[in-house]
Length: 572
Image (cartoon, rainbow, N blue to C red):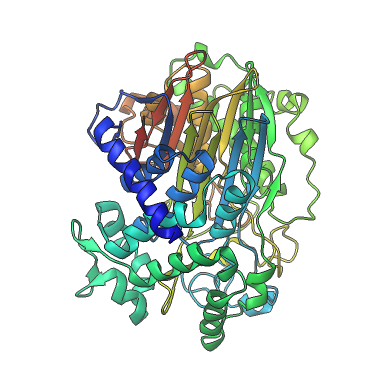
């Protein structure tokens, strides 16, 4: 009965949206330089259906926290290789309008308590494709996504589970049209082949032995049943109830170590975000575990220079930003971890005095190279099995949330439709490494949702997908917004570059090479090469970032969906 009422409520809101209209941007429409604008609320995601689902919730009277959960659940359905109920988890940064609080939420999954480094010692690198931590029933962490949604909903939400999960259930049950990004994810780089190895997963996501075709309707009835069970019984059915029992039984039968107790003992955790000031703004980002420290350290270094005096994306600009990022990555390599007992000297690392010392190391004429601390990965390119969305409501509650499946371990648990992650590969086998494998602890990730305030009011909220490119993408978009006063769309659309720097357990590549997106001119590349940068082949696209800017004074919302994937913004 409650489910029917919630469907009617949300269905009526969808009708109102259809009458009133909303702003949605996508590849080629509207023009790249145009922002989607709104006043009463906005949702920016990597998939149009997820953006519309969040807007439905806002139109039905929900707040940003309700809408963020609804969009996250729809992304679990329509981008099944990017996040989902079996995903690693992620991080969220929130601004609560009534209290003015800015808080961080860590819902990265934890290693099973039975995780033993010896069980993962076959091979030197956890990320290697044939390693048990990368591709087996030993690979998954306890999934954290649902726990993150629960923390948001229970702390600040105004709707029921049945209401916020209704859109996801509709799309899982009734199906959705497969987009190029979804079909391509299953066919690219062999990652879909991991799922295809098992008959149950192959039966859902493959048709005649090939990834589900673009434009055809994909239905996931078992996933719909799983979502309906959560809507009826709450997240407890997943973390210790009947679903947990089903998961644990499947893993035990196939040599895995996840148990019902692992699920029952897992919880998301709230924390104080890291912050720094930058040219009159306050910038908040994710505490250690995520790469917020790298974003903020780089900003502190750049504050020592007159960035705005440099032509945007000129050789001088790229050189300065790349060299600052390298210095920050050295500290991340040494210190960053998701373990809850780690002692990290954040006061020093984020101090302006330390930033001045780091800035003094900058050579305006020559690129510097930093010795790799750990062996590198053979992964050839950045891999985006992560998604990000940002939501702002009429009261200026803000949720900016990054979540990931990371990569599929190939495991889709029968009768549930849930694809599991391979988050164990983000640990290290080195016994001296702060990120060594340890039961019950969380590995470090690079996700780092970020929020900028001015005069204690939210101004700019953003986050990124794209593996090791994430902190660099966030940093560049921040600088464009804060130093060059670009609106959200222009800051997101502008060509990017990334430093390839090896980090201890994350799969950065060897050395400190530089990669430019293809839109940079040959003259810029030649000038950077003259400064000693080792340039790799230009990239078609680097990362994916979604952002919302709240225009000061007017309170107008300006959306920046990323056209590098299928970014969309929905507003009213």
